[in-house]
Image 1 (cartoon, rainbow, N blue to C red):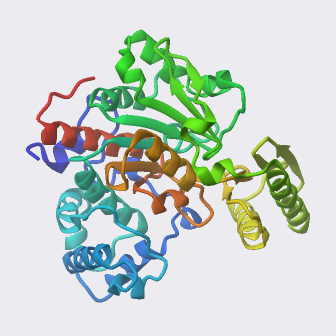
Image 2: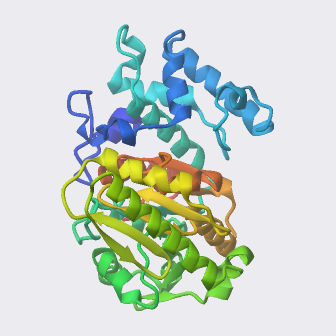
Length: 398
């Protein structure tokens, strides 16, 4: 693209502090070891012990192409048994060249790329690959669109970008663990700043039709009305056939068993907790300060011990641990089916793709961007919009 990576990261229109050097690259900051665990990325890091960065990216491009052709018997599957599907090719060598302009990975002799740097290179290559055919862009909420525990405020930089995505004729959906059955106004409270911006800019009705919220991982679908309110979509119109078969007794048993595992193991870890029970979820919130590792232990314990006839998602929310009926894989599949979008044209953006995160299930259904915080989300969506404009040869509309 004409502007190049350096021009893009120095773009000031969004008033985002863009990284022009490693010293001030706080937008792409790391989040800590437990939040940076992925076998595929670790495999790429380990390759740098015997290969140059360029050689690593060239090999990975070749292995990904082979894996897309035969995912069961590919060399990549043999080396990283947990690797999932790739729905597009990835231009990793070109992405490395872009990223190298300010990270200087190729020139470093003693410091190999870290987890965040490999993640960024994968993100750049995915943005470039997705821009041409993007039809549906989905976002996690907490930690992706706004900081954990916050709501969508009117000064959120993502408001302008979501508006632009809708005006590029792209469907946009927020796929979140938050679930409020029968209470669309509670979803509206969380997204108040965004909905107010839609109203103030008089978003046309045909673009309102492109915005959705999937709540409770996969349990509640809401659409945006022409009056900029949220309303539930009738379940029979969008739920997958398998989801319609979930019985209330099965749901109750799942939540009862999950609650028992959470509370007994919180006692084991000497952590006083408050139990929160919802229609399709149960969770615990610590009543005293604790460390991330304790919440991680609780999450992985539930994943190991809980058995159910229906799918579930046990995840570490950073300040709590929840078990939801269903998961984002089902939520995305249902949404993609409802909107008639395929995996190649769908992109999910989230911050929790580790084993204990609720975004990890999305990898089985579509392309992904793994971000560390809302600033990174804005960073890569700005890049995506610029690519969409170039590919479609249309003006960038804000």
